[in-house]
Length: 113
Image 1: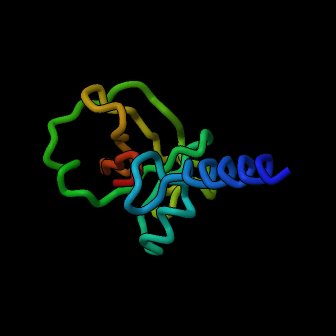
Image 2: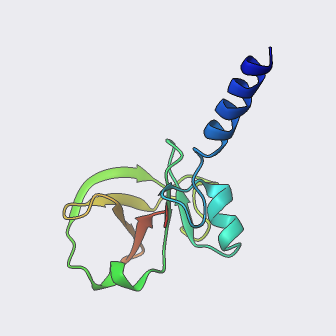
Image 3: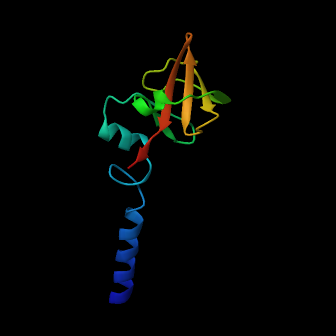
């Protein structure tokens, strides 16, 4: 019985370590992004991938618009207006190009470090 209990406890510890966060590798969910930065400019897609705006290195890249990914609906983004079109960049698929009102903003996939 003790062996089974220890195995279950070890499994629980391993499974709880699978959710990345600050200081860990992997994709971040919206809760994790907002915990690190409550004022984050973000986009959350239907598949729960979260993209954030504001990293200088993203703006330094020469990127071209690829395929359309989504159109912003109510509740999907913190600062983008409803109707904004999101495109995947051809060069770096983890960067989205958001186009609205003649403007373009870049968002990168939120990842733990």
